[in-house]
Length: 226
Image 1 (spheres, rainbow, N blue to C red):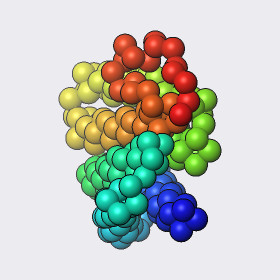
Image 2: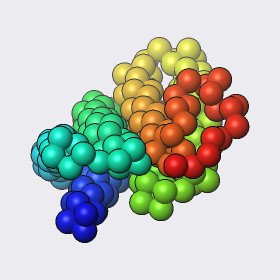
Image 3: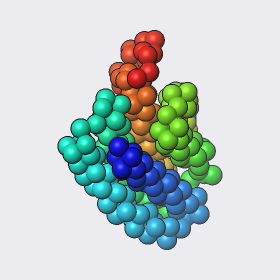
C-alpha cells in the first residue's frame, strides 16, 4: 500500500508539472502579443511537446495503476480524474499555441489600440488554471468553486473585447485585419478559462463524487464526502 501511495503521488506530481508548464506557455504567448515579439513563440512550441509527453505518461500510469492495484473507490476517482485533467491541460497548451499563431497575424499590421483588455483577461485565465491545479493538490472544493465563479469574469471580458473591436471594424472596415486576430485571441483565452473550469468540476467530482458538468447540477446540495 505504501508503494501504491507513492505511485499516486508521482502521478499527481506529473499533473502539477503539466500545469506549471502550461502556465508558462500562456505567459510566453501573451508576451508575444504585448511585446509584439514572435521569438517567445519558440518557447511555447517547444513546451507543447513536453506537455504532450506528460499527458501520455499520465494516461499510461493511470491505466496501469487501475489494472494492477485494484484501487478502492476514492483512488479510482483520482486515477480517472487524473487522465481527464491531463487532457484538459493538453488542450490549454493547444490554445497557447493558437494564441502565438494569431499573434503572428496581429503583428503584421500596426497595432489597433492598446490591446483592449486582453492582458488582464490572460492573467485571469492563467490564474484559473493555477487555482484549478491548487484545488486538485489541496482537494479543496472551495477553491474549485472559486474557479467556477472566475469563469464569469473571463466571459465578460471576452464580450467586452468583442464589442469594442466590433465598434472599430464598423467605424472603419480598414481595421478588420488588425482587429480580427485580437478577437481570435480573446476566444483562445475564453477557451483556456473553459478548460480550467472543467478541471475545477473534475476536482469537485474527485472530492465529493458529485458530477456538476451540467449547469443545473451546480444547484444541487453537495453530497457526503467519501
